Length: 83
Ligand SMILES: [Zn+2]
Image (cartoon, rainbow, N blue to C red; front, top):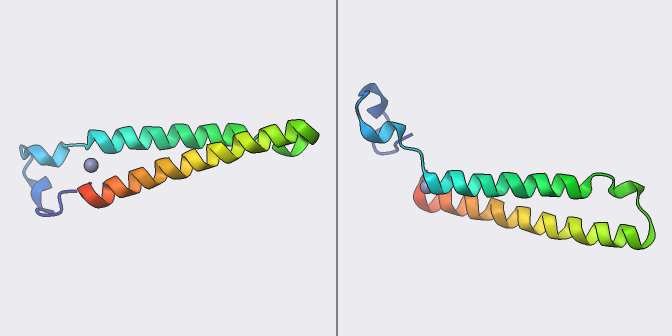
């Protein structure tokens, strides 16, 4: 929603009412992919043991960090851009 003109949706030809922030969509896609990768990394983690568990744990740890970074980037962009 347009913060300066919250009533702008009343004017159907007002161009900004349908504007979608491309950067926000891109960052959201990155976050969604990172979240999917984290989910995949965590699947079956509890059935592993030994060295296999250590490897899977390292992969999931990296996936979690990437997910957090992507979420931060998305929230930071939304804060700065107001979108
Ligand atoms: Zn934006």
